[in-house]
Length: 256
Length: 159
Image (cartoon, rainbow over all chains, first blue to last red; front, side):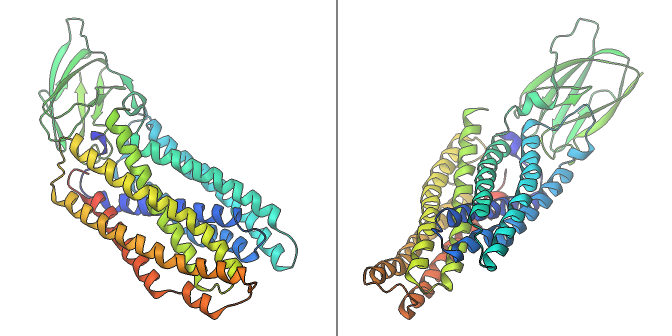
């Protein structure tokens, strides 16, 4: 999808995020495999647990911290309150944070099991609990990869769809989008209905969000129209494609 | 989600399977390094089989869908330098990983032989096969090539 296109400067945190996520996924698989196939071998039980502790845990920390870095770099923490985080982002954070909690439970239960084994008692039952949690986490991460890459409901989740028809008394504003700026034909408008004609002169896809409404994703060379009613004050506008607002595609329109 | 979004999503799911399988295989390699008994070698061999399946699924799935995307998307072309580079690295990774599979089959075969002969205790010969320098070298080469592909994909123009 075109929305995957990033402004420069975000590649390194994205790389760290991918590396962290795949380390977690691989270590979860190794843990599940070792615990499921241990057949009573204490060393394999330990490897199953230590895969979680020494490989998956650092991977999770790397994934979570770099995810937060990307979130801030892309300016999601800086967008207006009306603009909610899109579904894919909520799925990603949900799996990471709730998964992190489950992960902690798996580590504690598994740790108790390993300590019991050291003192000659059986810990296999507790390690089965750890394994079951690791299976749930691995499935959750597959879902998160799908959500973060496919970005389901990307356009509809971010804001209410734009009205595209004006009633006839609307103030017309032409918005030119390019990398990474918006140029508006007027810097102030009278209150009431305003019709924005957004022309994408850039090489990447963009959209235009204002007053809780947004255009669809506009391909290079294409145009979209958005009509909304503005009240006196100032109206923030931005492009909701990840990273574009942080790179400069945002501004404020004065409403008289 | 559009058709291209689904292809992109599956492309990255295959890539996650591949790299996840590789991480898993390194855990097995480290675990095998100190294994000298037939039972534990066979146990880790079974876990290694899961990682091998993940790698074998991930390698062709990632490249096939990646090339398909390069054809479908107007901003990319299969003859772009970074795509050619990724394909070359993919070939290096595939050859190296397959060679490492073959090297790590040797201790499993030896462990089966020892178990059939009733020798389940520590074996120096088995320990030496588990610490195969060739296996380690090929696994490292394959891993470096795959990490370079990931870097190439993240830093490619238009990513």
